[in-house]
Amino acid sequence: MQDHDAYLGRSLNQRAYDAAKAADTAFNTVMRQAAAAGRLASGNTLAAFHKDSERVFNEEFGRAAQFAFNLTENNGEDVIKPLTYFAGRVVNLIMEKVTLCGKRTGIQEDTVARELHNIRETLISQRDRSLDDFVHGMIGDVRLKKETSISVVNNQTNSPGAIQQAGVGNFSQAAFTQQHHALIAAIDKAMVSEEFAALKQEEKDELADVAEALKTEAAKATPILGG
Image 1 (cartoon, rainbow, N blue to C red):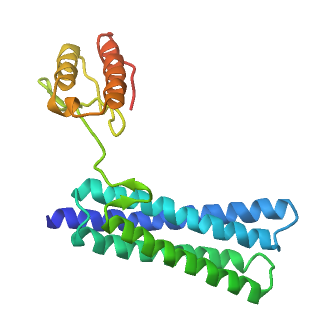
Image 2 (image 1 turned 90 degrees about the vertical axis):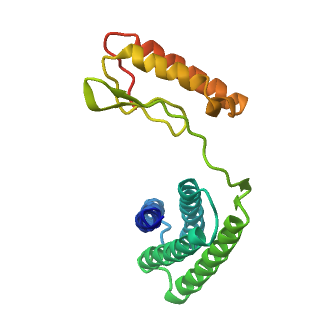
Image 3 (image 1 turned 120 degrees about the horizontal axis):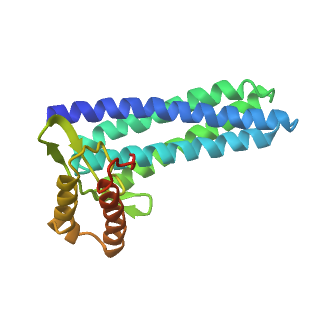
């Protein structure tokens, strides 16, 4: 469990920096486009900063919350605590980026300061609301659920390190080897598994399409499907 906790902490830490990069890109794009249109020093620029601040937070928190739930399969205190810390860091990092950009717009300092205050208040409100949603098993309007995954893993007799993996959604094809019959058998086995039977019909249909495509490629002399 400690390894799980450490991994969650490391991932959320990196995701916070990813959020900062996303915010920096968004704000600089706003400034570049506004400057090109000759309206950098306008209220529209600050309004765009506000909109992008909220968007980046919501997107990054949503992904992090889903990741944390997928990893731990719960939304208890051991997950809420690091996720709360993550959310606070994202708010602070976004504010650092938007503050730097706000100073470069040419807009009066008191006007920028007022809008920065409004942005922070919006982010804090969104942080608290998002965390409350997570505690109650929600991400936005969607109920938390572990993302479905079925994998076909087949260790190769002549290549101990080789792994075949096929799937849909979260699935990826790690590698193909020349043992095509073994892969086809593994796919067929997955298609009659309990995990497959538990899927919704649309998920079954999607997986069946991917499995058929994989089997077709596996039957060729040189498979060409990639991840």
